[in-house]
Image 1: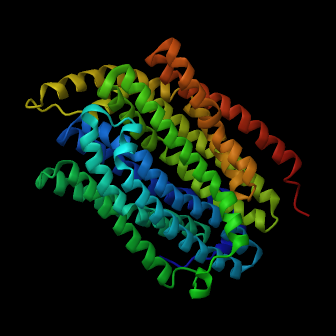
Image 2: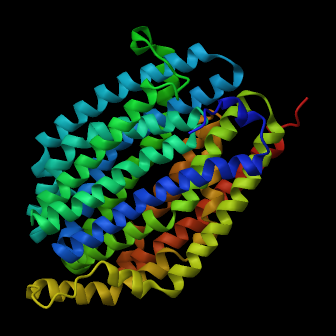
Image 3: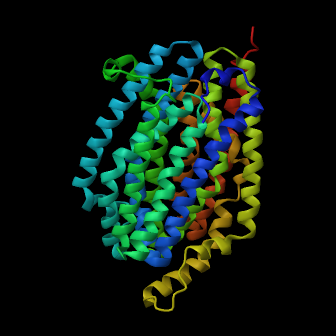
Length: 461
């Protein structure tokens, strides 16, 4: 790959730059999403739909610990982007060193706690009945690899902050491809069941960590840190914490959402209803990959140009990112409205030797998931404004509005809705909560973003 300088973030045309940043990000997220999707398809077809529900129970805990790395990464990368934009490379180096130290310390401690409280956490997140044993098996193995995943997620955001999206893309592709190959080997060939699914995923994390380490030790990275940079600096930690808390709070709310959803749906329809939500969750990860790609591509562009006081370019990046993301979101909407039965069927086995309980669960999922999918994705065309709007405030270092807007959809609207509507509307109330929360959150974010553009992003002088 040709050597790329972060200075191009402030020079190249915004449209071209966003495509250059967003396409690799989208490809990387696509491969990761396909990994999650195909992994679930393998598990559903080779182990069973209850196994999909078991993985869905474990994800909030493991993802929350991994999200600590992402939070530190995004919070620190905002500083790195702005520091590189203003020419303060020493601050960028110190920030990166602090990110590594902080990620290692926090995630290792969280893994220890997660393993100690395993028997309490799994039932709390909906791992009850037939779900408990496979969930515990998967959870215990996955947790050993989570610190490496956290370091990968942190390092990936720093690579983007340097303006090198192709390397970040490769870092996302390597563990996904490795996981899928090992899924086939461990689950299908060796017949290791849930143990195989878990070890395949953990091995994927280690592959990713190896590549991230290679990037920063090679000549491709501008951030050549030494031992002094690892020493924790309180001002930098405070800034990382303020900005990273936005991402951490979002993931914490996501984990709470999983906890509530798994328990509410288990009470409404047992293990099979949790499996319906697991399939919906996989489709959410997969279907939004191009939108998240645009958002990831937007972050370093907005941060660098804000740090360089090029406000016209910041505004142009906002408008362009919303336009691109809205276009792909509309395509996602059309596909999922037309083919929900097809996507649901991918996750279900049609083997004639399935146990009776699996056959009953599969029939339930096939009956309920397509309608749920249509409702969950009903407001997809407008979600781009909410995601880009919240991302802007994080990119430019405005932690409080970034936090509030990030929490708007799930924290302020979705969680209250799923606690209220199912009491009156049952299962329908659960799925209607998704588009209602999307619409309300987009209205609020649109207002604050419009006010920011009109009052804060004055023309370059």
